[in-house]
Each structure stands twice: as C-alpha cells, then as structure tokens.
Length: 371
Image 1 (cartoon, helix red, strand yellow):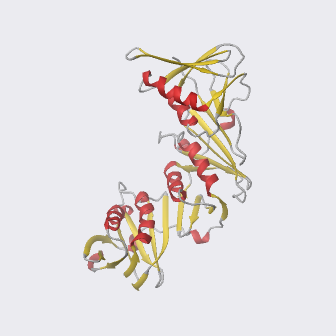
Image 2: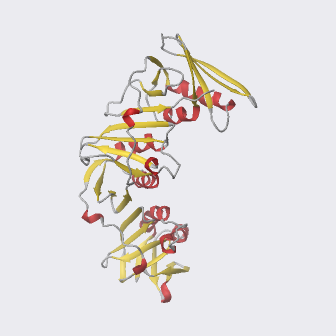
Image 3: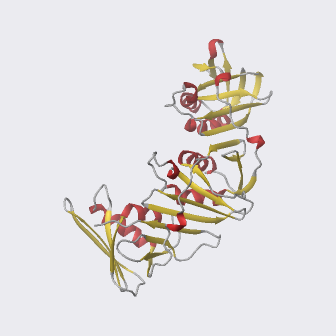
C-alpha cells in the first residue's frame, strides 16, 4: 500500500480512532488502527475494541492499493507533530509503515490488515436524520449518573427510548437517577428501550461535539450507529434488562420547595467543603420561606447557609449526598428549580421550574442518607 493524504484530514479520523483502540486488550492488534485503500481516491480508517468501532472514509491519493494496521496512539502522535500539508504513507517489508512529510521520516512496526477484526458495515444500516443538539443534550444530562460498578452491567449505560417523535434517556447508579426527554422528530421507532454503554456513549458524544444541525442515527442487530460526514461510530448495545425506573420516581411528594438554581448550586459547593470526602453528606432543612443547608464533620467542623425559598409547608430535615445534587443542578439551565420532598427516608426530586420551549423535560432523583 502507498498513498498520500492531507495531515488535517488524516488527523480528523485518527483523533477518534486512538480513543477507541484498546491498548490493554489481550489481542495486540486491537491497539492498532486499520488503514486500507478503497479505490484510488479514498482510504478506510478503522479502530475497534470489539464493543465500540469507529470508521472514517478519507480522501487520499492511492498510488498502490493494500492495507496495514499500525499502533493508533503512536500514529496519532506522529501525525499530530508533523507540519501542515501532505504526507505519504507506505507499507514496506515485514509490515513496516514508512511515513514521510518533508524532511521528516518515520518507520513504524505494523501488522497485517487481514488479521484485523471484521468491522460492522454501516452501509447496510437504515439511517434517519435527527437533531444533533437534542442528542448531545440527552447524553449530557444523564451521563454522570451511569453506574461505574462493572458487576452491575445493566446499569453501566443509559437507557435510550424513542417513539419516532420524542426520545428519552435514563441512567441510574442505584443512589441517584436522571431522566431527560427531548423532541426527536424522525428518530427511530423502538418497540422497547436499548442500553447504550458508557464508553460508547462517550465516543458518540465526542463524534458529535462539533456537529451542527442533523446527523444520521440507526440501529441494527444489537448495535447503534451514528454517522456524521465521513465518520461512522458503531456501539454494541448492552444485552440486559434496565430496571423499571418509573417505579423509582416519586409521584406524590407533598413538600414542594422552589428557589434559585444558582444559589442552591453555590450553597452546596460551599457547605460541602466541610462534609466527608467519602459521603459528601449535607442536610436540607426546610421551613416556611427558608431552605437551610448544613454539614457537620467531627474532623473538620461545620458549614451552614440559609436560602430564601418559596415554601409554606411543614418543617422537614433530610440528608443527601451534595455531589449528586451538584451534578444535576449543573445540567439545568432554568434560573429556578423545584425540590420535591416527602420525609427523611424518602428520595428527593429536583427539576427546573419552567421547562424549555424545545420540548425538553428533565428531572433528577436522589436517595436520602442518614446524617
């Protein structure tokens, strides 16, 4: 194989590929990126960890067709360091890759492309065009509450539901839950929800971070596909049953507190300084017109802040993990939020007071803790 390709074009594919390539895999070739000619004017670039796959069809001047696989991280670093303009890449003897740009030359150890795992073919997928901003928003508002406990694999991702008009993402780690809905015209009509794993979701978000307008979304044979421009991402879905999240969301809380989102966010950040590094425990105390946030740590001392609030009910004190509320509040754009509480052993709900005019609907549920 021998080709010439523009450095910036090459980097656009390598930036995503080197994130996907698995350097810790038992199969050494999974740490490599696949390069394979596709005619005389295009090269296919691919990387996979067998769960997430990225492919890019990049314009190139192919002088000799063929393929090779090369260490993804090292190749990305090399190309990133090269001066702007065109570079050449050639497969030499014993699968060495020869890279040249001006007076700069590299020889990299490579592996045969025939040993690379077969990549999912996005050309066989039925795609629909959907709004990139809405999809990014769904991810951002639920990503932080995905469980990091790998033994609970059914919680290691986000539940994605869509009826073709609205889409919903839900995640939970057992201590908190976040749910977001957005208008999603043209989206796939799913009979039941699918679970997108954490790493795959991160790569989908990375691929779409600079995408404006619409992108292409499709599902096929337990995989979700995203295509934008010349880049395609394929993510293997989690084959598990997501818990019945609707049962976790309280529907009859009678203590409704409304207050400034930014004031509550700042108060939690300040008061939690005095809380335990492990539990981040703070206490919410509500009474007429007031929400008091306190922390008490025998090793450090105490913290306390009072906030004006719209509330005219009975007094209540309940403990929560401050970090969980901070994460949720950080994803709310509305100037005011609504806390829904019931008792000291009941979960708390937080949501924006006024929903946005784009059909967005967002809430977070946080389990209480004894303080």
